[in-house]
Image 1: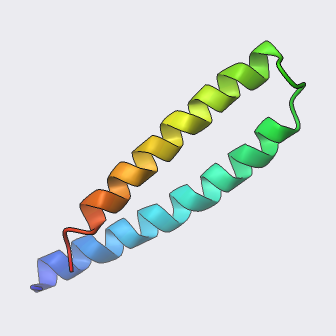
Image 2: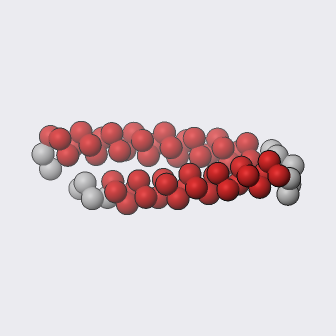
Image 3: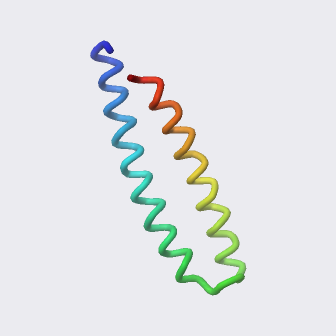
Length: 65
């Protein structure tokens, strides 16, 4: 892997780390909302979109060995 690929991989690793932490925090927030309420439903959808984006980021990161 060349230097630019190494830098990209390091940047992606940091984005993944931060995104994982953020999603964990959001999950705690969602669990504190009233069960079945509009805010919880919306927050769960937002959390699911974030999780899907994180998975795409992990797939992209896997291209940098």
